Each structure stands twice: as structure tokens, then as C-alpha cells.
Image 1 (cartoon, chains in turn orange, green):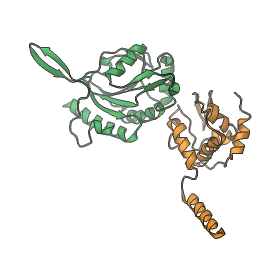
Image 2: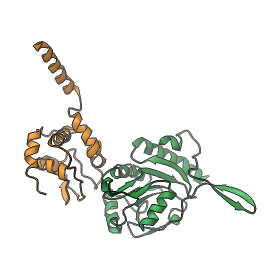
Image 3: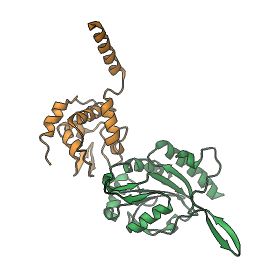
Image 4: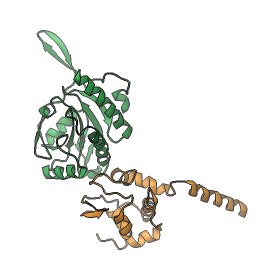
Length: 131
Length: 196
């Protein structure tokens, strides 16, 4: 019995390791909620929509991501030397699990190699959002 | 949707829309559907009318700058068309805002600047709401206000290819890279036709 569990565990680790897409739930949510603007390649659109791929801003503002995803954001930001100033819509129905899935997807998609974030971490950040 | 507009091997593009039957000297004549007259203002405050597109083929679409759904994808695809044809005097692009209350000339100007495109080729227009929604019907696409929709409007994601005689020659899904590839192939066919 134990051996079976171990084999299944081993296989699932192997599958995860072989896949380019270790966060399928996050990817699905990203495609539904984020991709229109930020792009399937994470590179944004011209000076309209900022990139998430190789974004210095995203790497430096990890703590803000949960509130931004849930409540949207406005005002000027500078990403990799380019100014962006458009309104990002809110997604208030997303749960902390879904937000963690999205962050883990974008943190590891494309060329990104940013930290893993747990739903608990997201929940903690969400409790400090400035409306 | 690419199927509506033929394939790469097709030599001639179809005429789309409802034919008009006119009687001249007792003879009945059939004219393919034409885009109605219009008069709008673009991001550089230029007046845009059908004569702006004299001797040009053009691609039209409907969007609004604060659109959170399909518009950014459409604009990304339209930018591909722009990049290919920006130096071709026989091609123009026409994006109609369906939210003229918000999308004033300066708002459209900023949007075009952020897209890094010039009004010589790509016109972002605003005007009277009724006129814009009316012309959408002439392009055979839907555009209307709907409070329950994200951003407050629903509209088609179609790109409409129009020849220099104001006839619709192709309709494409502006959110699909594949369909936009087909559009650019069909533009080549149309440009050759217009030359001959």
C-alpha cells in the first residue's frame, strides 16, 4: 500500500517536473482574467499595458500583487523604464486560492523565476489592502 | 470566421452584405452593399469621412479605450496589420470608439500614442453616439451599451475589410491571430484587384 502511494507521488512529481506549466489552475485563470491585456507571452501591449515577463516592477512589488489582482489599480507606474498609466480592472470575486494560483503562474511563467506564494501569504497581504 | 472570407488560393474576394436593387432607365441593377456616409473626428482632430479613404482599402473595427475584455487583443492584432502597411498609402485603418462620452479626442490621442501609431494610417475616431452605432450597422457588426457587460458595452470583435468603393470584402475575428493572417493575405488580393 505504502509503496503504491510512493509510486503515485513519484510519478506526479515527475509529471510536474516535466511539464512547462507547473501551475495549470493559475494558467487557466490568467487566460481568463489577465491575458487580454498582458498577453499570452506576458509582454503586455506597446505602452498601453505593462509586461509581466521580466518586469522589474513586478519583482519589486510582490507584496502588492494580491491587492492589485483583487482590487485593480490606477495611476502611473514605471516598468523597465517605460511609464504606464491606465486603469486595471478589479476582480473582486477571486478567492485567496485563485489569487495565489495566478501569482504562482505569473511568477514562474515565461522567463520569470520569482518566489512561490501560498494562499496564507495572499490572505495576509489581502488583509492590508488600501481601498 | 476565416471561412467567410475565402482562402489564400482564392483569386477574388466576395462582396458581403445585402445587395441593393436600383432601377435606372427602366432597368433593374444590383449593387453590392455599401458603407453609408459618415463624418467623424480622429485623434488629431482631423475630420474623417469616406473621402479620407478615397483610393484606399481599409480595415474597420469597434472598440473603447477602457475596455477590459477583447479590445486589447484586437488592438494587438490590428497593430500587426499597421506594422505591415504603415508605409503603404493605399491602406488605412479605422477604429471607432463606441464610448464617445469618455473617449474624447485627447483620450484617443493618448491611446494612439501609447500604441505608437500615427493618424496618417490609423484613425481612432469619435463622434455622435447615434452616428457611431448607426455606422456599425452599416459594417454589419453589433455595438451597444449594456450595463451588465464588463466596461458597460458589448461589441463585436470583427475586423471588416472595405474596398475603395465602400464595399465589404471580408470579415475576420480580430482576436484571432490566424484570422488576422488571413486578413493580411486577403488585403494583398484586394490591393492587386484595385490596381488592375
